[in-house]
Image 1: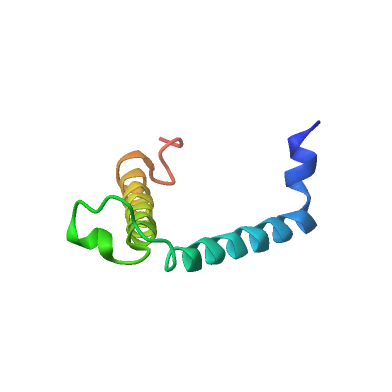
Image 2: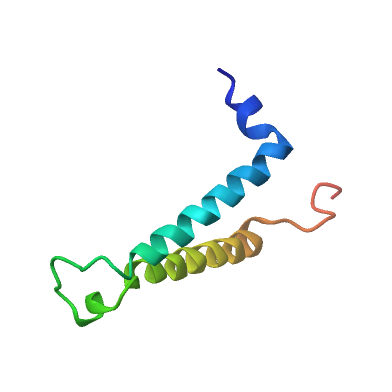
Length: 82
């Protein structure tokens, strides 16, 4: 089975994105009803804290890595012409 055929179809990409967003919203809503088992820190009592913390952390890592790549790795337009 060729995964490029399955995931490369433009029509299916939209369906996958919609299903992914629906799953995220579902699990986010379920987080309000599930009680945490082992509370070690005060912020563990907040509903869906881990989801929000993970989203913010991943966003910071992505933005930071893009800045680092542009700053350290990218070359000027005439780099190869010299």
